[in-house]
Image (tube, rainbow, N blue to C red; front, side, top):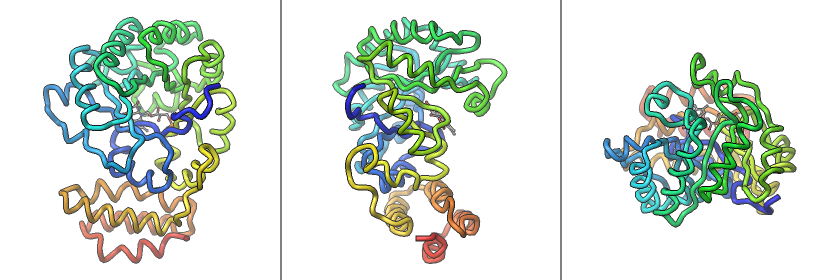
Amino acid sequence: MTKKSSHMFCIAPMMQYTDMHDRYLLRLISKKVFLYTEMIATGSLVYGKCFDQLEFNKEEHPVGVQLGGSNINDLVECSKKCEQYGYDEINLNVGCPSDRVQKGKFGACLMLEPKHVAECLLNMQNVVDIPVSIKCRLGVDNYESYEFLHNFVSIVSQSGVTTFIIHARNGILKGLSPRQNRNIPPLKYDYVYKLKKDFPHLEIVINGGIKNLDESETHLKSVDGVMIGRAAYENPFMLKDVDSRFFNKESCTESKKQVLNKYFEYVDRQLENGHDLARMMKHLFGLSRGDKHAKTFRIKVLEVIKDKQLQKHKKDLEELLVY
Ligand SMILES: Cc1cc2nc3c(=O)[nH]c(=O)nc-3n(C[C@H](O)[C@H](O)[C@H](O)COP(=O)(O)O)c2cc1C
């Protein structure tokens, strides 16, 4: 197995969740986890000129940007832009099964076009110096054999891309919502383990249904990295010991209260920059997870959002956290 992969512990890209504020919060808890942006559709950059989506905090490094698209010219143009913004990596989304994304002919449906995916990745790599990676599924619809996945990776890796993040489920393109597509198709971790055996030179990162650090450690016996999405969003403090357990660095020494206060300082700064209070506050819901007053804390966060007023609630929120 590749030793000390930079992707040993990653946070999954999640639309509406892993925005720059959430990533800043997570970075207060772990200095080492690899962060990803939400998926950014190339069309919204190339034609919509929505470049504010690319904004991130310098504290977030290492941070990759995830692009969704399949038009080679657009992907090339966006890759150059992302590199200029200072991202550490560009990731191509080949896993999103939503109808909107399918209409745009990108995301999970590209699992059926490995040659085109390879061409996209080759062209992206040709115009940037930062690494380009891919996040994909095991297969789509009835293409659910290990051979299908093996063939996909075999063709796509000819582009020179070496980091494959695999959501260990099939994507169902018709009949399941994106949410159902994250829960209903069965997890097949054994496919991902086998992939690492068959392609030992590739960096294989496993994703899907991983709940905690113990499970992560088990996966890391068979693959190079783990990626966690929902469990880390719902309980960001689960990341507290990631740096010591996986990176040989000191654990986060801050208490939840200290993390909260540092995040408040950040929120105050970003309010001055015109960022929205509700968008920043919602990421705090999970911080009290497991605490005695977790529910009251969450209600208080909602109150802040409703009141559009943080200052007068700061002390109460801090006192509701256990330590
Ligand atoms: C709300 C939400 C939004 C998501 N958005 C994206 C996305 O933008 N790009 C992507 O590759 N995956 C996206 N995903 C899928 C996650 O990255 C991940 O593959 C999936 O949640 C399985 O991992 P988990 O079980 O650790 O959450 C999203 C998941 C959720 C819950």
